[in-house]
Image (cartoon, rainbow, N blue to C red):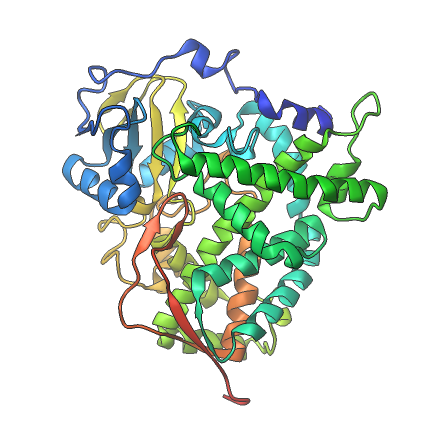
Length: 469
């Protein structure tokens, strides 16, 4: 299958192990068919959506405390299940027996905003598209990206020094700079405020009681913002066709089909918008959490500085390729408490069993990572921040799917190493150049959908470090 064919199938992804879409051969189960599973119906039409959107973590924690590791709830006219725990992550995400459809799980939420996105594909359509996008994340590409990471991190952090900053919007601005530089080969800083607003509105379309733009202002605003982004990116595609370079955008712009026709601009824009949103949104979450815990635990900041000194690292560029096990543990613990993708959705193509319950085919099923990462029997004193949970001997003693912030199996996050490299450069630069302190003693409130972020401002003081400290 050619690269152009892969993109052109973006609106009609194939399935693995079945010949027709799941929606053609299965129906959603009724309450009677799920009667053995505890849960909550909620309000007419919208179900529990208002409760979920007000406090996702609180709602799902109460459901798991009452009903155990599998529970059901009704939302937008359908019953949904959540599975919690390492075994749930292995069953749903690793999916060794190909029982679940990613497209049918994510499609109702994502397809109107991100048609043909990687996480909404199954089977050969997924494999082919992953190979196409994977060109942006090869090791040779990552080596080139490191220079961009260092440049953009140093520029952004210079503006932070000596100020109190609101972490989440600053992390969003930084990751947007990096995503535009790496994937588009240029800075969008001149349009950054407006473009960031559009990206935020597109992501905000996922936070809606209704998916129908006629009934949801957030959904309608997201679709308008997506059209604006398409116009912005369409101009860049045409520019790259006229003046090609070697960035990822230029590769997509040069694609031609079997007849020699260029790839439709809109389909290239769809691919780029999802890639940019995914890279930008999840990294904003991960970096915000990492910097919060760095500021909240100065004793760990000193341990990480000592590790940098022992490794002979004097600048962020040196850190990019260095082995820093303590820093890696620190980053993992931040993502354990605040996974950037708290829930991963699938739909059962075949009946399956979990925790002693038989679950019928057609069931919308989610792996709840934010609860799986806080199970006391797996993570003693789970709300305590302790990077040593990820020491090699501790990791070996746990179920291998106890920790899954990047997913697992064939759908494991394509940009995992991309994000880890960004975090390493940013953490190392700030450890060497600044002292971070929380501007308030009040613990932040975290909002866990569709990615984890603080609810309200999370202010941190960034004080320049004196030479020799």
